[in-house]
Length: 142
Image (cartoon, rainbow, N blue to C red; front, side):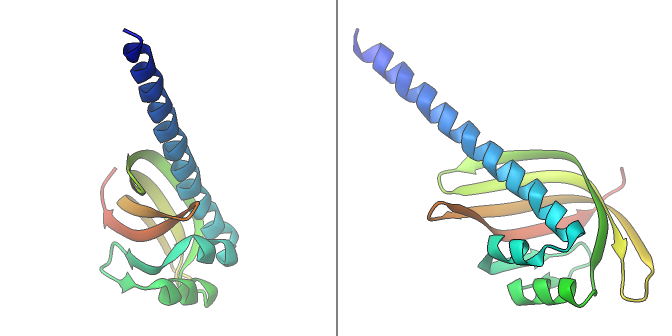
């Protein structure tokens, strides 16, 4: 009978740990969008895994250097990102974020883009830090 309370405490602890990780990853995923708008590319650089694959809604597939280069040169210039919904699921040291949002910005010719996207982001825990390993976005109608 003493085993049951111990098992309950362990399960509560595991649940609390998972919720903390979910909150941490969700905050990071949202903060990443703020960094894009505020052009804090040094912060973004630190959260992108060295093997990141960034797949845009138009089919561009980019590695870490290409993502950072396109942002710093102004090829992509985000002016507003509104997260409409997001869900984080933790699988051991991997987190999957699924979300929907509105993404607005300027292209190099100063033409504006305004996209509604559904996206999936995969984060992996490296040491104590969550890092973005993969992002895939698809255009949707909201």
